[in-house]
Length: 289
Ligand code: ATP
Image 1 (tube, rainbow, N blue to C red):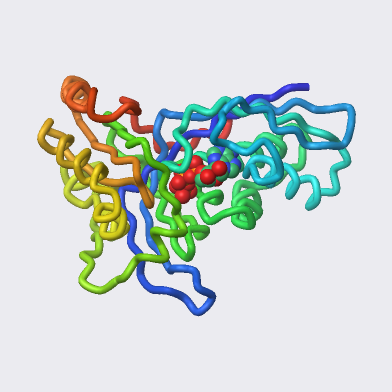
Image 2 (cartoon, helix red, strand yellow):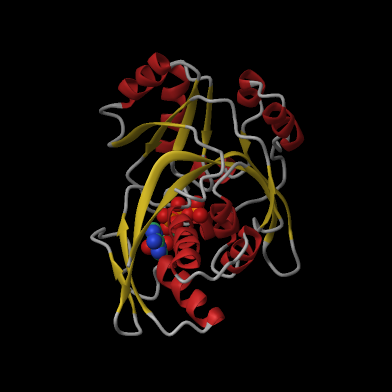
């Protein structure tokens, strides 16, 4: 028996760090949505009781360090399933890019195994289990548009953003999320208007949404990696409606209402940056994909 699951990348429309908690996690508020750039996960039952990661991407571990492996192990242990599984990962999302690729793979494995093994878990139950793997996994289980609070695991669904184009550019560097958070200082940082972003989504106001994008982690990543700032500037010059770094970076995205504008931005980045994508915003429930 084989089953396929789509694992889309996420972008942050806003990302705010409120304070550092006594448990050393940061209390955050993020508005996130999904885009049409996705890994594909194939789940195939095995005759023997083991977990195999089947991926040809050189940047992704093929063992228990893989978040997809950890998701399968957690599902097996939690529900005492004595079956083996082969996890094929077609990796299309750039790795260590701020697009939650690993978290989305883990979430897709949880959704897929829930179906394959007929466990009957609700979305909330899957998201709570996913939080044990990583803060972004809960959001990725929902696969929608949402406000994420706490350390990222408390999810409140929001309306999908107005339909538009997203141009993504990833410079040839990987950024460690942990390092960026460790170097973050709230002093003098301009905080995004999270409530304003939520209102823009509720009123389906594309211009207001563009006016409210903001990410406090730019205050760490931009000085550390000048190429990220350069890409931002290039996108702005090419006429993007909004430009922002996703997560802890280094991927920068721009929003464009018109397709022609999106391709103008894309063309302006060629020669500048090897990994550039033009995709559609998704942002609505796709649990059955
Ligand atoms: P986030 O936005 O959630 O911080 P990211 O996009 O910055 O995530 P990922 O692509 O998820 O980063 O990868 C981060 C690290 O996790 C990489 O160094 C990679 O080796 C490891 N990893 C483990 N499993 C996976 C996976 N299935 N896909 C991608 N990376 C994985």
